[in-house]
Image (cartoon, rainbow, N blue to C red; front, side, top):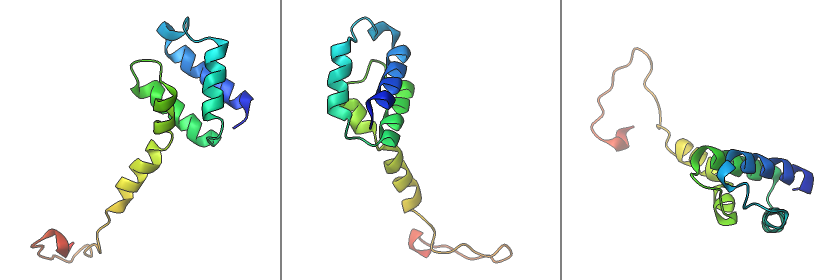
Amino acid sequence: MNQKFFKERFMALVAGFPNSSARVTAKTEQVYFEALKTLPEEEFNHAVRHCLLDCNFFPTIHELYNRRDDRSELERRMTSWRPKSLPEENEAREISSVDDF
């Protein structure tokens, strides 16, 4: 990810956690960038949005890194279960166990 994109999203984090803004220095920003710069922009953006909505305190590098792919994990869980087939609209069928689905 480029530094300009990182800075824009990092400033969104700072703005979203106003009680932490006094403790977030240019050095803090540089440490975060160095630790997270290998993340794709999409993943970093997702992590920032997730933390803005879900964190009570300014996120650590570890929290941001771990939330980068929460969306893909959620999507995996949501799509991993699919019924084998659905009955036609007028077709009734008895289901005796989950395996019948």
